[in-house]
Length: 140
Length: 130
Length: 267
Image (tube, rainbow over all chains, first blue to last red; front, side, top):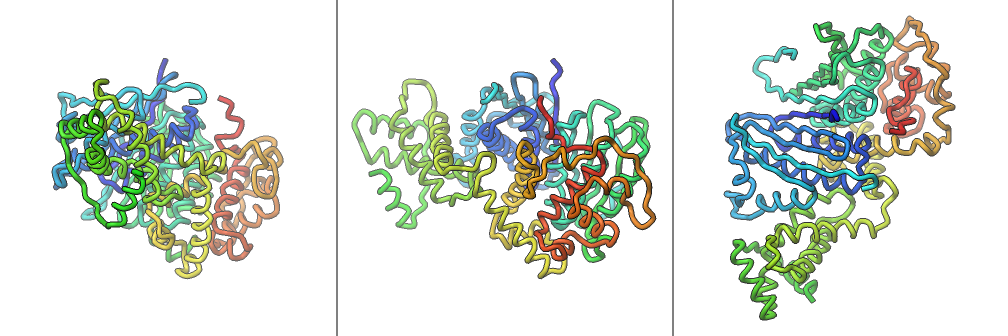
């Protein structure tokens, strides 16, 4: 079955993270997401996008973050991609260098907790893709 | 993909949204356009009317391809949108209404269909709605 | 007991974050689980408070203060630590997250939210509606989101999402009377798509106006024929600017012969 796809790309800056959440809010009725699931997905997507905003590009670099949501019958696949440094999983797992806090690693825990599948890739072309899959059930 | 002109020396943030054709995704268009407007220097009313203009024009059109795209530019003056592609449509009334709502509206004919060009800038805030 | 400890800690004004590696956490966990070492547990709790905080932060803007959310989340953390079985092969942080989130979410449910939109967001919207009008009067024009957020003493993101949830709210109440005046949608919608004729003065079409009620027609006239801004219309009619926005939107939809995408969406 052909999935319905919504794509959003925005500058890698925290001021535009809200657009990712607004996209999800728009998709929610189409995918029949409950309030709770929508809230959880907003949380996970904000984490993933914020991670890209913080780490993907170097200080003086400008880049974009791409969100792609595919509604495919029984599941929702959300991909957050950037064309930046692409350290992959290591980048998401390691503690925030500046403060020594393990918070960045906790972002991964947050994502894992609210979705059914989580994959992180660094494609050969560069950058990073975080793929979240949420299984949909009626009245979930 | 259309290259819109860039005002020299002014930083412009670019946002792109693509949704499937169909009424059920008009809400997504509206929400994201609103968010883009809210993140610019436009006032609440200007953002609201930009949403209204987009919504009212898009509701009256059929997508000519398999997606409806919004290409947005944001600089310190306001928001510039390019929405399409749509099948050619004679919607003079709708265009006039939209023109009253935002600063400028135009229809651009390209190979893949008609695109709507809308922009709302800060100069209007002082000038009022005329 | 643990709650008293947390209160005490917060009262001290200390915000110490101890960075522990997973190995260190396991050591503390072991000390607590097998030897009942309470100090080890407290250390573990303190170490993981940043996790609770970062989860709680995501729920800010729903009408609950961050401190309360952190307090609630910490209960989830304590439960998670108590229930955690190190032999399961899962990391403590991974295990704790759903428990902490669950506790925070349960807290919201217990606070009797309105069906679709949390009361707190509605309250923020009411405040924003008032501020929109008072700021417009003060500034002489509609405020920017930044100005609104400052006046509301809220985060800009919160304001943006609150304003957009008002859209969702109006869209979802379609089964009920369409607006506060009790008119239902079928009454408002023209029977068929109408032809359009131009009007010399402005952009508005004569035929479409027939489908509107008196107030909507007035708003459309003021907006398109007389060129008033929404805030000026609001002052003129005596309703809020947000209400003018909603009515104007609906009027345009009616006139254009199209119904909002949510209507009759039985997909």
